[in-house]
Image (cartoon, rainbow, N blue to C red):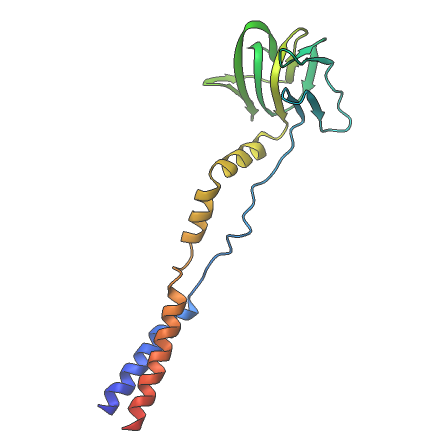
Length: 200
């Protein structure tokens, strides 16, 4: 009896020690989405125009508060090697050596990404050498945002939209929460059994 109690105590202690020693919980509290500022942003709800690069020329626009849109008073070209664009307003688009946004009567939303020589506008793909974005004189825009780092923006957008899922996946990648208390409990039980076996 004495021998079996001590042996069982050693087994429990060993199992508990292995569980405690291999316990690993990743630090998921520090997960943050990479933030990027737009190179150009027009916000109709406030009538504000933001141009982030200090050397960039702001567009020549006027804000129609009653209609809730900006009117471009001259052609405006944004030279970019790659970009992500989201614009809503009475506008259409065409693709040549640049992505041109032009005036039209119908309201629509345009979302475009140009990266690695491929321009995607909605579901359409264009293999073109695009030099940037041209907004034509007279175009009425309600909202517009242009990012000059589309990869970082896409990562930021995905992260913010799926943040809870990312944190859950991070937590699931480590040991289960019960592993450490279970390991410590088995170690204590093993020590108790071994000590009890020594009394006989």
